[in-house]
Image (tube, rainbow, N blue to C red; front, top):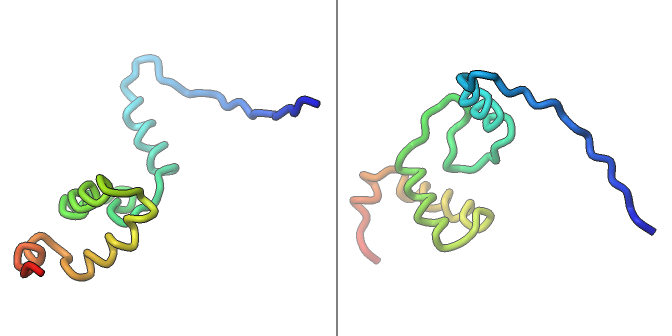
Length: 89
């Protein structure tokens, strides 16, 4: 017996001139983006150190795994100066 699924259609609002598209996209992103430790809250600028660190960590594994390691790393080396002053070992 086939299963039927009802899908609600939503009306798309697309400006004719396209000038408002970037604002619409950013508003959508603010509503739907995942909350991740390296992402700033909506309206704030990203910290380049946190973004860089997340990019390096995410090359090795997935987002779920990186979260706790990211927080632990930042607790030990909260900025690039602290990281630069770290001793090997």
